[in-house]
Length: 293
Image 1 (cartoon, one colour):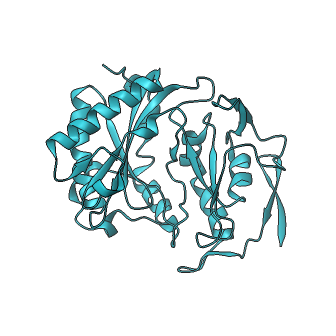
Image 2 (cartoon, rainbow, N blue to C red):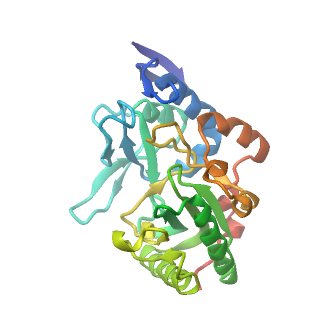
């Protein structure tokens, strides 16, 4: 069944609203679209002006899951796009600038992934990111311990860190920067990952090698590279249940003793936004951005 609705003066086609995407909870495509419509005010600023990579799961997380980076066929002409430099030559990618574009994209059934730079300045990062990925049997609880170390280390360099769950197993840390070459940001982030491993050798690895990761938290600094992307705040994830990459308070990080305490689903977002607003809003404060030293 297909429905055509008007969103901010644009005609948007929405399809298969009753389709169950997450059988474990019965979460439907209609509920997915409702989630994005009601979370748009918080989500859109994190998408705006950043080329979007779509991780699509049109038949749910148990079906085919695949990345779409180029502008998809059939994209309406009112959806903004931008040319992005790549090693194999320039490509065009989608910019999700407004509610209509968000609802069109959400109808694809997708995760949203974005780089640390904006379309007008490729390779000039205005965000620093660490992806803390636990190797079993470590969990997000151990990620929180590492996040607290990184928060203090970043603060020593004048950078304020903010945390969000990955929506999967781990935790992301973000800091706001004055535009800085992505190569420099990556080198800086790597140096902190190496320091973290030196200070917390039983807890941290900065190397991606799988054999080194069981029981430890992998501090992934590589997502600062210009070609890489990170799950956008508030995106739903292609997991068995409709989990969300959720901004969290440092009090929640400090007090976490069980992964369930930092597992959030679509239905959790409205009350959290009512209570906290967007916990990552300071990232947009120009006065808060600082150069790397």
